[in-house]
Length: 355
Image 1: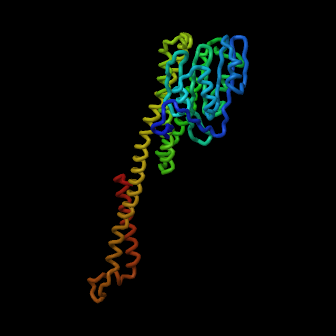
Image 2: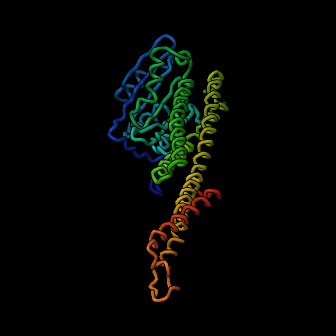
Image 3: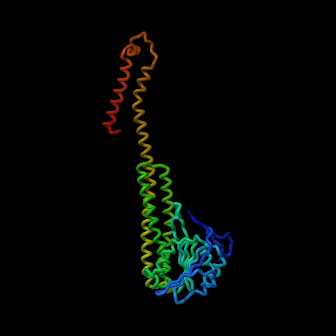
């Protein structure tokens, strides 16, 4: 639930440790574009990348995989990135934030998405926004985040081709925010199903589903709240790296964050209330069972009394000792009396609305 990644206590600041990426070798992808042109490159080294950079175009350098520390050092030297910022890139449990440096903005965000096994995966996305470039780092080679943006750039759809690198940074942040909505829809639908199950047939399996939904909501909340601060910091940016035109789009992203947070709070309140519903349903079900058992016990109480009386071994020499024992219809009389008692009690309970 709570991801922690930290250096051994006493490690010097700006110490770079590689991030295991599950077999994903670091890959550099360079996308260059302006209003008229679009091109993609896969440079094999930082030197090759440096030769391809064009300050007259927007240069999007996207790095998938964080396992090559030497590559990260070379990139930080090329783009004059502070060593502490690169350390934060490798420390993939950073809280989303915005930091200002002399020639760029450092943006840390989180992309939350389904992992294909019914759980939520949180992936850190680190951005360095410069005047004519955007340097982005991603933990894993998932195309679900950047591929739709790349396709829009390639086709020329939208505003990106006519805007600067700040709009590209906004597009990535907006894609991360938009991912919250389908996840929230799934979690909300699961909570509604849990609510119906808790009312009709509460069980341990339903309780486990409720705990899973509450855990998912906690993950979403931990990712959504800092994301709002990222948008707010970029809106208030005074470094001129974020243009007034893009700040309008950022305000829209900020509104989406507020909407997501409101939905999350409502879902959390509903999930918390479902625990009370579970306990109430469980208590009601227990009371129903106890009522049935109590009524059954009350029905058998007079019958047990009669059976005990007629089951006593009296001396048959006296007429005062159990005269029904000598009566030919005594056995039938006993069962008729029991039946009348049960029917009388049943009518009495129905009139009292105890059944």
